[in-house]
Length: 184
Image 1: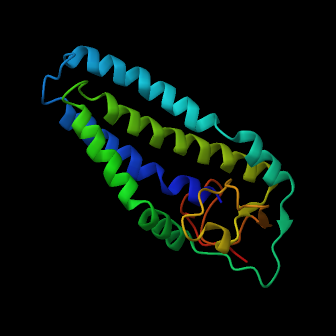
Image 2: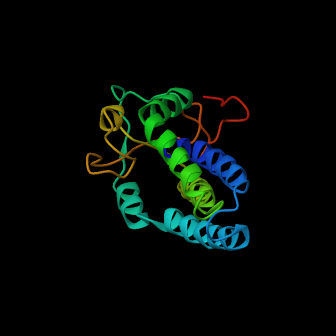
């Protein structure tokens, strides 16, 4: 489940950094200094809002997690990440283009906002990873609840999580790649 949260972090971060860097080229209507200061404020606000948003829903779903059965399909980390990025590629492109376009008004601000959203997702995935380590479980979302643009791992279609042991799958707690093969 943290893999889905983490899937959007890298594209948002890197697109935001590139948009902010390119956005520094035009002087903009407000000037570079005001644009960067506004962007820094937006970065901090977006990071906090994304990192702390919907935590009660995540906690409630994690508390009611059912043990995964033998007929539950658990998707690989790479497949989950690829599916999320494919489903959201047009939104990511539009956000990047909007950040570039807004640089003519307020340089680098919208790019730093995008980067802040990516940083917030990384912080949320790290928080979920700490919860998974403390409970010694990996939390999963059923694959059919994530299909068809169904939203995130705490969306309306998600009724509950599945849990497995910490060594199941190819993802470490928090959605990162497992560094060493698990002994099962």
